[in-house]
Image 1 (cartoon, rainbow, N blue to C red):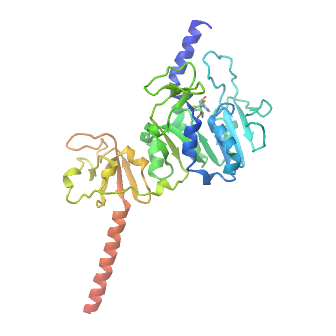
Image 2 (image 1 turned 180 degrees about the vertical axis):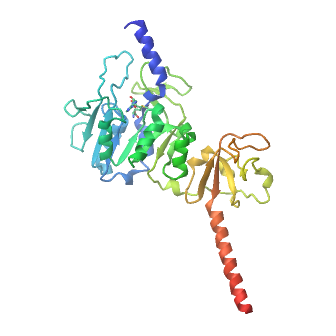
Image 3 (image 1 turned 90 degrees about the horizontal axis):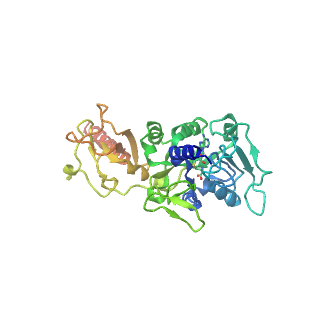
Length: 347
Ligand SMILES: C[S@@+](CC[C@H](N)C(=O)[O-])C[C@H]1O[C@@H](n2cnc3c(N)ncnc32)[C@H](O)[C@@H]1O
């Protein structure tokens, strides 16, 4: 291959670096075990997945019966370059629909594959046609198109479970979904997602980079999360609150530009504060919507980052404890009833 072609490919690979991270079966199994009750009689669509190599496809095909799936569709975008020197890939995408037929193994044969007329981009008409048939979309989409990818899932009102970068929480479109309880974090994040398989031409960087027993080259960026709108029981577990605000006011300074207190760690959220509290974004991993409501991201009333005596702590999310308010409301009503009762007695 000519040197300039190699350079071009290398540059392309660099640009789309995290777009070519392939998910490990162990990470898929470790997350999916928490959602088993969602899949009965459902059509699952993996729309950024080459069924011949995707572990998402592999997982759902292998667990087709156990999960009670109705259909599994995997659609692949253009060529999936696992090899830098494979420049011959096709410009067309393709897909495979699996309905659970017993075979020696689940891998599609060339007879099973249906070619798209176009490239199989998840935004293409052909891919959207498949999306409209699906109940749940599960995949690791291209990181560089994450906003658009999620917007499309919301537009088509799909259930989803997808991998993204932790930073995605800070995108205003994604934060809005989380605030409105239209999406939330899955179970595993950061180090909880062990790593991704990368193509041959990727530099193995980071102290945890390795080659596994099957020869897969693995990188552990430790900066990913699962984003979903499938409910889990963990999402309804309360964060245990052991601290108190009253008596410890100094530990919780007020913001200069918002009527709220700063809390440095999720575990330090006081149990007795009914106003606004700024907490680190890691709070979202523990967030129980029955216990807390999310108010706002990062900015004070002046549109600037939340600050304390002129200094800005790292991004904060403003939250409020629903239960303290509820407790207060109950107390108010009880007090009111008591007062009404007593004034009636006086008359
Ligand atoms: C992060 S990789 C993950 C691959 C696979 N889903 C997995 O988890 O192993 C993202 C994949 O999306 C594909 N892709 C990139 N742009 C796409 C697009 N516009 N539409 C559909 N797939 C795309 C890439 O080829 C790549 O295989």
